[in-house]
Image 1: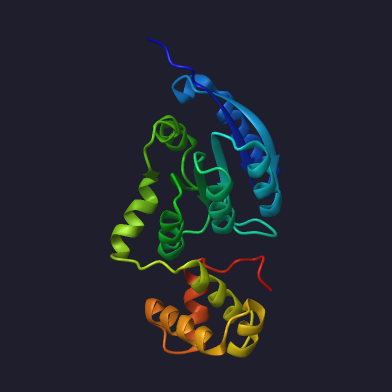
Image 2 (image 1 turned 90 degrees about the vertical axis):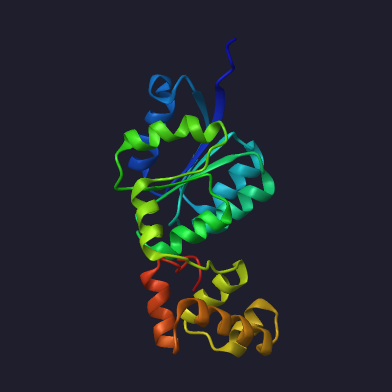
Length: 217
């Protein structure tokens, strides 16, 4: 019995050379266990990625973590909202356990390092399309070495990024439309998870773990 392995895909990365390389991979059915992808769109920033997801609702989204206007985690969350059945494979050059744990918690079906061999990604794509969740060996070892990592909530990530941008608790409250008391509670939770005792240590944690969203200013 044969199965239809024709699928649609969107590629989101702010580097044209990466988009082209991923396109070549998805067009190579021989390396993907017979899966044949039609690429609906290739986009270079997070806002366009969200728009493309809403329009096409593809079977697969290949998503870079660091893009202009909206970070990969935010795009992933929106992708789940607009197209919950889409398989999302995230790839990143950020090698930090906090960021990887965040992506896993947000529901990525695959998480891969840009330094990995293309063969590892090619081997994983058919398995992911069939329901598996796969983290590349490099990141799996990193998470294992880091031990239990408690990921930040979406609100905590927002507040952390606004702290990094230099806003006070009052300014953060005004930006997010919440009380200073609520900001302080979230900030305390973030500091606990980061094992930070000062704003400087909190900022250092955000930078070290790759949790800074370039779209937040």
